[in-house]
Figure (spheres, rainbow, N blue to C red):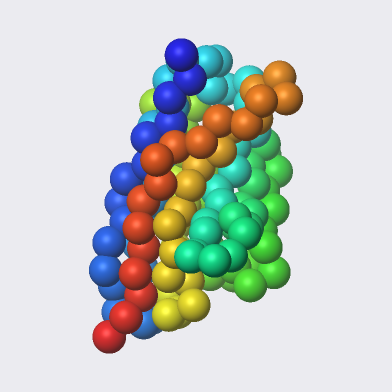
Length: 116
């Protein structure tokens, strides 16, 4: 079965950096685009970043451009989110996502807290 397991979240000061990882299993990872989303209490889950199956195309939400970088290692079945210049408003639970044949799969999420 499809499994997505996020890791790498934590507490960081404003201006700091974190790298999130999402380990995928149960499907042919290299055939599918991957996405990172985030969610804060009381708000809808929002798209953070997208990466194509080969990694050749990436897209970001406007507020993350220039600060976040999505990448993937198809040999390791892992997608990453490098987050730099973090702001308090980046505090959220971050989820990785795979849409496989029209079905959305989600990990359990990893908490990122940006606070001094």
